[in-house]
Length: 162
Image 1 (cartoon, helix red, strand yellow):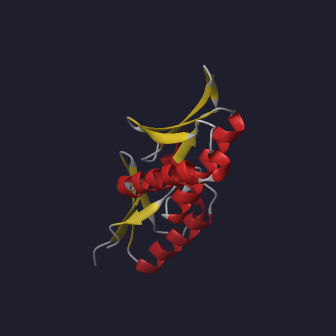
Image 2 (cartoon, rainbow, N blue to C red; image 1 turned 90 degrees about the horizontal axis):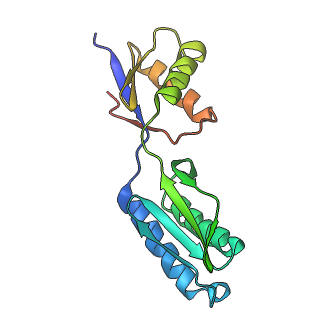
């Protein structure tokens, strides 16, 4: 009998992120507490730029973005906001998007599977993803449950379950 397997990946749905940014921009433009504070949010290449006239207002715009991302099913672990920086009269904040599993995190996840997972489960690092395989599908389900219960600093998705 062939091994069953699945892949552990960390990917973002760019369309959903774009929708969240657009919704946040609309809310910032129409909310009363953001009037006359030069608050805004927009794409800048691969990052999201937030600006406002104070650090607190920039943080408030970031909170609006986080709310929209959560409502669209995107983990907050996949964004990396910087600290607000003063740039003339406005304070800017950039939000980088994190995709892929770093080698360090892949090794950490692999170690968790080896140490705490069921026996006979193998985890292989393949670039920015992990392939987990086992003879029993129940063992794979156990690994998924185990990893969902862990507090890792990366958003995980489980794909290609065979």
